[in-house]
Length: 65
Image 1 (spheres, helix red, strand yellow):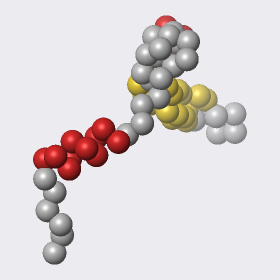
Image 2 (tube, helix red, strand yellow):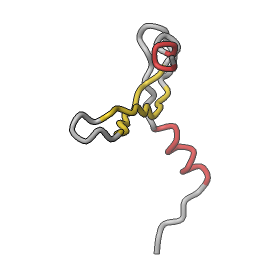
Image 3 (cartoon, helix red, strand yellow):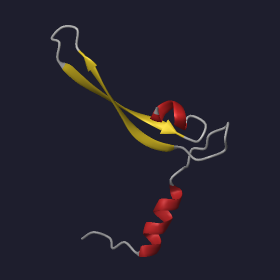
Image 4 (spheres, one colour):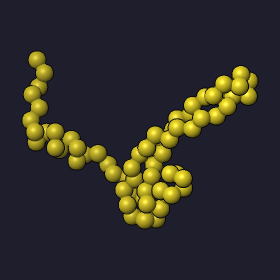
């Protein structure tokens, strides 16, 4: 049988996650999935590239524009 998990266990698990803070603006990073479409040179079809990016207040305008 599995061990039963209490509400306090769930809260402590959420607090254990380390938060990454930007050294420039002192705000916490949020992660987004950045999807770009590029045309393939071989086939001419469009391909989608996905990558995770960290966003904070100091680089927000560069990523969203």
